[in-house]
Image (cartoon, rainbow, N blue to C red; front, side, top):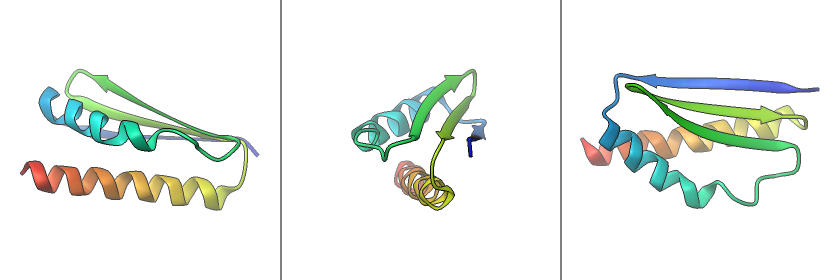
Length: 78
């Protein structure tokens, strides 16, 4: 099964988007086989693209973890 998930955070400043990207980069290594993750800055949006050819539970757990990190980073930045 092949799955693609795109999550967009709108109305985010470039500074916050850059900080979130920097915070997530160390986690963007050693992904499970069949799973990939990209982050894009588009205008005033931060876009997360997940692609999986493997287990759906692994994909959802990864998305949950990334969003938890994003939520914490946004709370810290205020």
